[in-house]
Image (tube, rainbow, N blue to C red; front, side, top):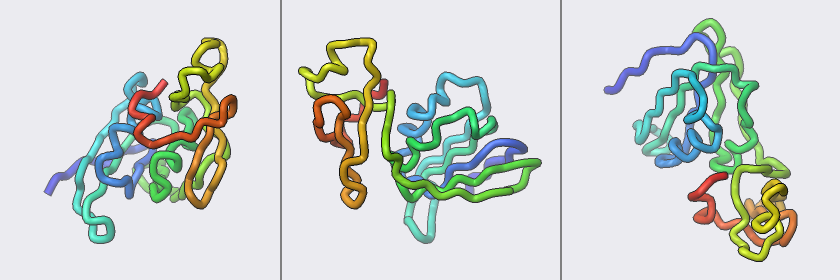
Length: 148
């Protein structure tokens, strides 16, 4: 069994769908930060079969956590203080996603005007459908392989 040490201050993202940890790592911008991160892929889970886990030792308030529900709405956020879990948070779909994914419509103004941020709004919460704020192009999950 793999054993990863505990963190003193930070958070643990648990119950991530297997294979999504690296996407979250990049979406949160952890690759650009100077903080310790442990990525555990394909960990055994009684409920999920396999899951990914991210352990991050930094202030949770410095990150845009809204993106987590966009990637996987079943994620649990465990906030760690003094080496102990002090809070468990569950995520809900954000009403708007700004500057994370890019509109795939080549005629969209967000792709021709470089000063405009890419903005998507939640069009259908039950079906988890997002649309571009400018051209109403529907977001498809495979479009998000490249993040901004």
